[in-house]
Image 1: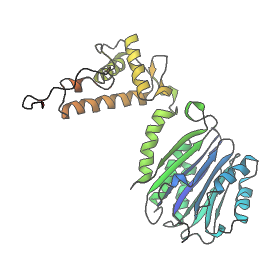
Image 2 (image 1 turned 60 degrees about the vertical axis):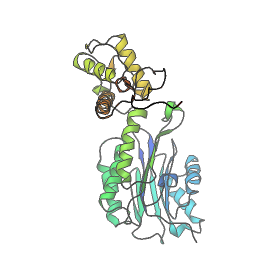
Image 3 (image 1 turned 30 degrees about the vertical axis):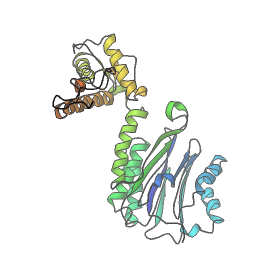
Image 4 (image 1 turned 60 degrees about the horizontal axis):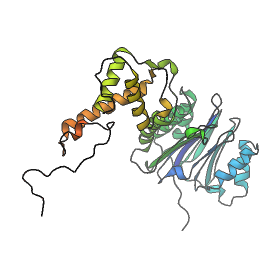
Length: 332
């Protein structure tokens, strides 16, 4: 029994302005992100799919690192591969030159389209419109690479996508020192391994990843913490137990300290500022979290008196376990 073949559509792309290389992919296949996308900053990006040869990933990146152009990488990877007729491959090199390959025995519909700085490819698709929509959408969507890649996946799915359905999706984008604490080049590395609507779930995960890990917001949108905004932040921090004062609107050291604690405990360190300004996304997240906390208190009966009034930002309690209800008696 041969290795499984799976229907997939993907895009490899390069953002010249920001020097980012990325891959986005969706498939009716479990954990497609563990197989298809490969990328290295200052080198390029690769998608290997259909009857995927995973050696195309590391071997192709090694060739790209040596300065081999995308089209030559495709030729070298496929020419000595006895399974090349069942392979599909997309490559974009360090300069943004792209190339793609679809083996003659890939399952219908299968094909690809290459453009300026990108290559789209897919197999077992609803039809050629899937790849065409992916390419046109990437070319015409404004914004940075994550927005354009996600838009391309959505456009492909609207044209029918993988004709067997949906299961998993992934997006990998690299930029020099783009990873956590500049310790790697993996600027965006997210995946959905099994979900009935993997592209929409990938978008949801990206929104949270963006809020937590990235700094993509326009500095012009920063809000000064004063007046009604300061009072609102104090109120929300108070609901969550971080702030113990009255919501006065005067943003003092105690207010800043409580806000800093909230930011650190929610892993938003990259969004913390020392100029008494706040990103709209953080203010919005704080408000939504406070609203959820109020709803929780309203709908949940406390086991310990006062337990639900403390909020997650409060210092840990302590003391003895809750006393049993009066109608119960501890065993002797």
